[in-house]
Length: 402
Image (cartoon, rainbow, N blue to C red):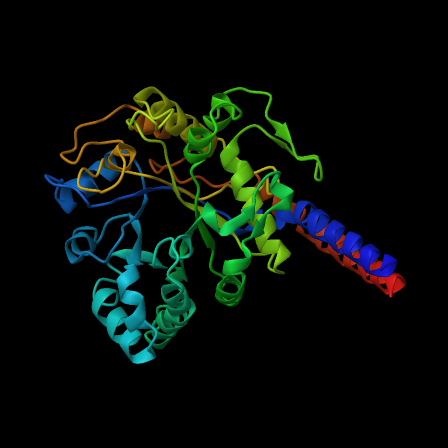
């Protein structure tokens, strides 16, 4: 029992230390960016062409849609917008078959690419959040079949395949270093991670600090969730300091992934935002808080920040959402996450255009190259050498435990 405990201690130490020490290698991947979610569950929506003009005026170069709307794909052709499209949950059952997946990609993707810069396919959305185990069983086969179709059509080097999950997939998220997946999703999640690692695709997470604050406003600091100045928290195991909840949530996901043996997968935030209006029991859903959250997040992005665990990797974040979607079901907050009303009227000003135009970029795009990239490249050789030494040391320690 003592030997087993010692091995577990060394193993746990290896997970934490290797994640922290070698996280800088991710900075070598270069450019990450800010995007926005373009939902369409509303009436009186702007035409896709007008939406394209709006995105251009905001200097955003990345967007995500929740289908493969042909009008949007056509309208976004020959623009600088990189687009993530979505396979609706109800389509997964059909796309587990390679021939059906090939037909889907041939119909919904190939005719528009490369004129329309499709860079990702989201297979479903928050599949793990419900109790539909059948749908969950379809997920990985559908991802594999769609990727296989992309390979067959020569598109796999341009278009990544992943699936966005909510934070509900985590059994533990506080402190971040104890992050772990729920046992009921473990088997399927293991297959998802294996697929992402083999295809070098990112793990997409929908992360909303708002929900945590709404559920426990007495104990959770509003400043902490809004990126305002605050004392933050220190993870007792890693000693890393967190001054906002979003970064803590992302790092909890990174640790959960590492615990399953996949510590090299990039984590991107496929959704985050704050509602500007809510029901009486939706604490904190105000226009003031929404403006502060999104404005502060934008400022962080423009400062090329990474999380405490991966400080040299600027997180790719997609704001939710471009529009208030007035036809969405559920509580009032669900219809009030947008920066704009469906007709293009501004809900509140987060200063997106101003922030991007005053940044130190050489173009008008909000996409920025991490300031750490050059330094990371210069340190590449010494870090590789250090990694080899460290791994050899780890091997010796493990042998001594056996």
